Length: 365
Ligand code: 13P
Ligand code: SF4
Image (cartoon, rainbow, N blue to C red; front, side, top):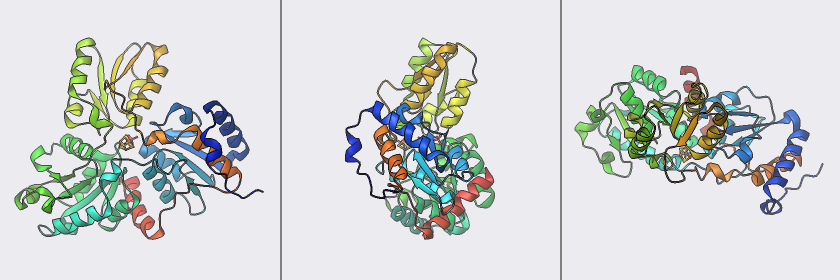
C-alpha cells in the first residue's frame, strides 16, 4: 500500500466532471470504511455524494451510531469537531477543506467567554445563577466551558427545550454566540425583550449596568450570522404583495423582525420537511442559505410549488462552499492511499468537557 500523501495541487485544476467520477470510484472501493455526512447548505456537486444528510442536530445524532472507520464531513469546522467528539476514539473525522469555518462561530472565543465569566462574577455568582448555553455553531473549547460550568449545547431545533431545561436549573442564561436564535427562542417562551439585553464581550460589564444584569433572564452575546443577517422584512412585504396566499418560512438565525413576520420559523431540516409536506401548488418565501433553497426549488417544481429565496442578493454561506468536488476527491483518494489528510481531532482535555455539554443536550432533547 502506498502511504505517501497526495498533494492537493494535483486536484486543483481538475474539472468538476472528472472529480465526480473519481469520488464515485473512491467511495466504491472504500465501501463501508467511509461514511459521508452532508449538511443541507452544501453545494449540489458534493451534497449528492452524502450517505446521510441533515441539520446540525440530526448529523450529531447520526455520528454516535456509525461504524465506519472514516467520517468525511461535508459541512463546517464546528460540525467536524462535534463528529470527532461524539465518535469512538478509533474513528477518524475528515473535513475536506480546513478553511471551511463558520463566521458566526468565530464571533465568540474562549478569551472573551472567560472575560465574560469574570465580568459577570463582579455582579452575581456565575455558577450559582447562570447556565451558559452555546449554540452548536461554536468551537469545541466553548462547548468545554459550558460542560465545566453546568451548561449545555443547543441547536436551532432543540433551543426551546434546552432553554426550558436551563431555567429549571438556574435563574439566568448566558447565550452565545447567536443573539438572534437566543432572542427568538426567549421570545417564544414569553420572556420580555427588556429581560434579554445584548452582552457585548468587548465592553466592561458587557456594556450593561449592574441593574440590567441583575434583572436579565437571558444575556444575548453580540454575535450573528452574516448570511441570515441579509434578510429583511421588506423582502417579506414584497412577496406577500405579489402572493397574498403565499407562506414565509425562516431560519431562527434571521433577524428578530424577520422571524416575527414569518409564518414558520425553524431549523434547516424543519424548513425542508415543512415545504416537502405542504400541499401541491403552494408558494414559499424562504429565509435561509441559497444552496438549500435552490435545491428545494428544483425538487418542488414537479409538484407545482414555488420556492423563492428571501433576499435579492446572493446569500451563499461562503465557508460551507469551500467544500468542493476537488477537495472531496482529494481527501477520499488520500484515505484510499491509507494516508488521511485534514483530520479533525479535538484535544482530549477539551473533548471530555465538551462531550459533557453535548451529551447533556442529547439527553435533554
Ligand atoms: P441547522 O442546525 O438548522 O442546520 O443550522 C446550522 C446552521 O449553521 C445554520 O446557519
Ligand atoms: Fe455559520 Fe451562518 Fe454559514 Fe451557518 S450560514 S455555517 S451560521 S456562517
